[in-house]
Length: 383
Image (cartoon, rainbow, N blue to C red; front, side, top):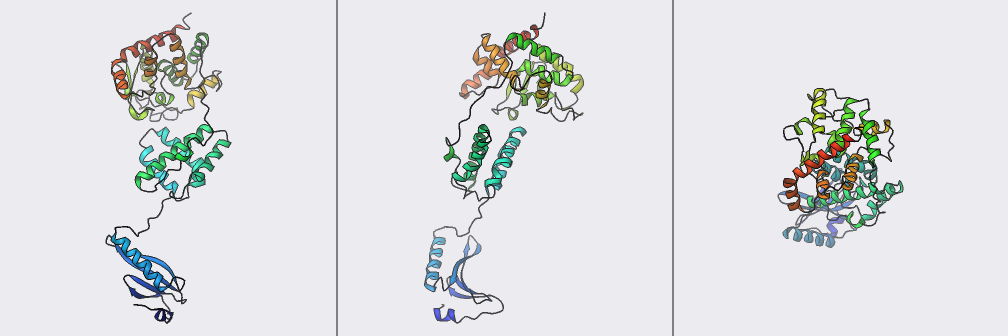
C-alpha cells in the first residue's frame, strides 16, 4: 500500500506509469510530474477506469474513501459506466425514423421540417438530459413572434412526443414540453375558407368544368363529389377503387385518424373515374403529377390551389380543403343526419364501439347522401 512519503518520492519518467495502492486504486505519474488517482474496476465483465482527481489536492485518505464507495456501489449492483447523453437532435431523428416515417409521408415531412427550421438550431446540440423547459420555450417564443402560434403549438406537441419516446428508451427521465402546456399564446382556430350558397356553388362548378387541364379538372370535380381530404384525393390509387361496389377504400396509413375509410362513390364519381382511367389507368395514381408520365408520383399539393386561383378564387375564398367545408355546410343546411355527414367526412369518433357500429351499419345512409349530393351539384347548372 502507498503512503504519502512514498507518493511524494515517485519520480517522473519519460512515459507515464502506474503505482498500485490496492483494491483497484492506482496513482498515475505523468511525464510532467503530476500525479492522478485512478480506480480500475470490472462491471458485468467489462473493465473500466475512473479518474478520482489529482494528488495532493485529493489526499490519499480521500482517494481510498472514494475507492471504497465505488466498490460498495458495484456490490449493490449500481453502474459506474457513464453513459454518454445523446443530443436532442439525435434522439429526435431516431424518433422520426421509428415513429413518423412509417406514417404518411406528409406527416413525416411536416415533423422533420418543423424540427429543422425551428428547434434543432436552438437545442439540437444539447444533451437531451440537459434540456429544460426554459430552453425549449425560447425557440417556441421565436415562432410566436412570427405570428405562427399554430406552428408553435404543433412544435411543442412534437417535442413532447420526442421526450416521451426518450423516456421510454431510457435516454432521459423528464419531459420539459409538458411543463409548457398553457405557457404559449393560444391558437386561434380559423375555419377553412369555402364557397357557400347555391348560386356561388353553381358558379364554382361552372368554372371548374371550364378549366383547361383534364386531370386537374377531374381532381377538383372528384373532390367536390367525394369531399375527402386533399391529401387523400391526391394520393388516391387505382387499386383502392372497387368499381363493382362503387367504393373507394382508403387505407389506414393514408387517413388522418389511421383507420381505413370507406368512401361511397356516386354515379358521377364512377363515370369520372372511367373517363380518366383511359388516360392514367396504367399508372399507380389516379391523379398523377404532370412531371410523372408513368403515374408513379401523385399530383402536387399546390396543383388544385393554383387551379382555384386561376379560375378567380383567392386564398380567403376557396382552398383545396374547402370542398369539405362546402359539402358539410350545405348538407347540414339541407337537413341530412349530422352523424352521417361526419362519417362521410371521416371525422374522429371518440367512442370506438360506436365507430365500429357506424362503420358497418351506416354505409347505405352515406351512399344515399353522397348520391344526392352529386345530383344536387350537377343540377345547379342544369338550366
